[in-house]
Image (cartoon, rainbow, N blue to C red; front, top):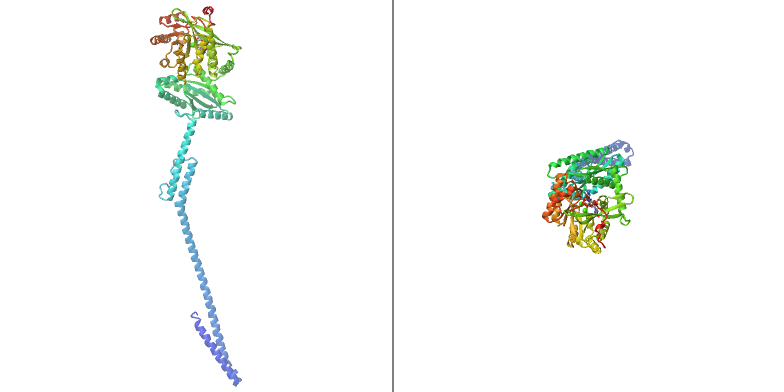
Length: 584
Ligand code: C2E
Ligand code: CA
Ligand code: CA
């Protein structure tokens, strides 16, 4: 019981007792004397009043106490709420700090790592470190693991890039290769249809590359190719493509609005740079063919046109350039037609053989004949072998033609004096047939001709320096072993005439007619002819001079002790003279 209520309770007890006592006394008095009630009433009312008063006080005190308690408890509630609020705020603050801390120490680094990986994936900034790799904790572990993964990926990418590069580039010069060249050419042609540009293709071939290889060795050849690559790259503009197509063949793609002016400018830069190489260890010279695209140009065709122009430049004296123009187009058309018509020319009887005498230089007695092929085209007339033999070589027809020449020449020679020999020209392409020697010897046997009467003329450069020179030499040795003679034709025009003499023991050297024909008015030619004769003498190999047209030439050759002569002076190629036909 609260302290202020207790006295009131006691007071109320006392008042209640007083009232009860007074009431009982009044009742007892009233039983004896009813009038006593009236007398005692004020006193009784007094006690009642007091009781009422005390009760009221008590009630007031109690309500007051209750109010008090209520007020007190409300204050407490308010205070508790404040505590909760403060506590909550504090906790939130801690949480916030925790989050900030987490962000700083955990999430940020992870995000940084993720960002770096994303950059790496996108191929940017591949060399940058993975952040956090030096941390000692788990994040450091993560960063290091990812760095390792990235290194592995980088290696793989590098390998992939290398493979892609190798597939599209030439290793030695670093230039794009044929594959990339073709892709780019097709692309440039498709693009030029939209942009209105014209595409020029340069087909480029090093001149006398074989001679460079012979003189400077393989390493020198490689140096020359690298130098050529650098020279072309320097001459070309940034968006031109310089490619190495293989061997000593290069090509350039040049797309420009102003053609052929741009091509001419590039050509000038190339030849100016080539002239500079005269001061270097290896002087470079190039033959260049250029073709400029027309509408709806096929990339293969465009390159072929440039290539044809290049061959033309080469045959026109090397270290020159030639555009594919209308004249060349006409020639190409003609060549294409001849190539087509060549097929079956033998069966149609359009081929025949002429025979040119070869004579002893002193007595001028005929020692034999060289068989020379002629083609009478039904519409175009006589076609020179210089024109159609290369076509037959390119198409492969030369194999069948060569067999026909051998058969027909031997059939003819079988009818003349058995002391006379027959000389046949063999194309390098014919040596691709492994059974060539066997065929030639069997044909001779069939016609009853001793192998000793056979001479086979091969051109040195094409035959002995070709890629299958071993097979060629094997065939020549087989022919030689059976008694036939092997003649080196066009001696002096090849790349390494003397080198060939070391490779193979020829039975005769034929000085090229270009030297013989210019002997009189060109001192170096005369020296060459003279030295070849001396060389043959010292090696014990007979020398024959072809293209002898004048008495003066014959006199010189005789003076130098040339063994045999051949040329218009002695006799033109003609049907076999009947004078020699053995009387049956
Ligand atoms: P080649 O083997 O050097 O033949 C000699 C060429 O010089 C022949 O030309 C001949 O007619 C020509 N000639 C001969 N004497 C003189 C002369 O005094 N003055 C001039 N200006 N020329 C002379 P042709 O018959 O036009 O043959 C050219 C080339 O065609 C030959 O050169 C040979 O490489 C090739 N050829 C000819 N017939 C055959 C053949 O049956 N098979 C092969 N594979 N090639 C052949
Ligand atoms: Ca010949
Ligand atoms: Ca010749």
